[in-house]
Length: 510
Image (tube, rainbow, N blue to C red; front, side):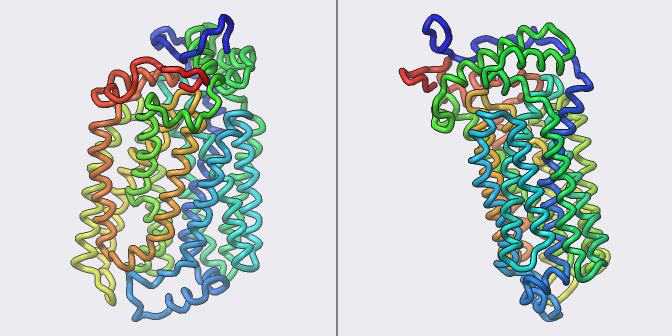
C-alpha cells in the first residue's frame, strides 16, 4: 500500500495529450523479435493440414484413413472423418488452453520475457519429438509440448507488443504477431508443397522444421528487454523508466510513466487477479476477452487453414494441386495483414472488423451455394467451378486477414488495465484455444454431416459478430493503453454496467 495509507485506484485522470516520444528503431526491433512468437502458432496451423493429407504419414499412424482415402466411391465429404486424426490436430490446442492459464501468474510475477522463453523452449522440444515420432503416443506427446509452447507464447507476445508500442502505432506494431502468424502459415504451406514429394519421410521434415521458429523465439526472448509496464509492476521503477525513455527516444516521459506507476500500484494491491476480472468494473473487458477470440474462431478460418489440403482434395483437386491451392490461401492471408497494419491506426479497429465481416459473410454464402448446387457425394467440381471456389475462399481469407485475424488478438491485449492484464490475456488465449480445439475436433465430422451447410453455419456466426462489434466495441485507436478504462465509462451501453470510479473493499479487491 502506498505511503499515507491511501488505497490505490489506478489511473485516475487522462494524460494522453501529455505523452511524448517517437517511434525508435529499438522498439521496432524488439517488437519484430517478439512477434516471431506468432510464427510458431502459424507454422503449426499450416503444417498440420498438409501433413494429415500426406500418404506416408497416414500409412504410418492412421492406416484406416489411408485406406479410406484410396476408395474412389467414398463419400466426398466424409473420406477424412476420423476422430484419431482429428485428435492429432486438436490435442495441441487443448494443451495450449491449459498452459495459457498456467502462464498467467508466471507472466505477471516474472515478466513477459520469461513466458516467451518458456514458450519457445517447449515448442522446440515438441518439434524435435514429433520429427522423431515412432508411434502415436510419441506423436501426441510432441503435440502436447507444442501446445504448451503456443499457450505461453500466445499469452505473453500480444501483451509484450501492446506494452512496448507507442500509443499512435500500437495497433500496427501489435499486428506484428498476426503478421508472423500468417507468414508462419504461408511458410508451412510451402514446406508441405516441397516435402510431400519426399515419400515416405517428408512429413518428418515438415514437423521438424518447426524447431527453427522455436529457436528464434527462445533466443530472441533471452535478448529482449522487459516491458516498462512489467518492470514497474514487479517493483523495478528505475529500470522501468530507463527502458521507457529508451523505447520512446526521450527523457520526457513523465505522463506515461505516472500512468504506469498508478496502474502498477493498483495491480500490486490486487491479490486475486482472476477473481478481480469478475468484478462489475471489469465486465466489458471480460465480455470482450471471451467474445473476441470466440468470434475469431467461429469465422471458420481455422477450419479452412487446418484442412485446406483435405478440403481441396475432397472437392476433387489432385494431391499436388490441393497443397498448391492452400499455399495460395496462405500467401493471401500474409499479404492481407499488411493492409491491416497500414490501416488500423488510421481507420480504426471498428471499420476493419465490420467491413471484413461483411465480405466474409458474402464469400461463405457463395461457396455454400456453389458446393450445394454443383458438388455431390460422388462427383467432382468442374475445373471452372473449382477455380471459382478457390478465388472466393481467397477473398474470404483476404477479409479475415485485415480484420478478425489481427484484431482478434490486438483488441483484447490492449483493453485490460494492468492489474488484470495478464489474467485477461490468459482468458483470451484459453477461449481461443478452446474453440480452436472444438472446431479442430469436430470440423471433419461437421463437414461430413453438414456438407455445404458448414459454410452457412460459419456465415451466420460472422453476422452475429459483426452486429456485436457495431453496438458494443468502442474505438480504441489512439487511446493510451493505461487510459482505455475511460472509454467504457463513456460508451452508451457499458457506462450503465460499470461504476464511475473503482470501488475498493477492505481486502484491496477492486
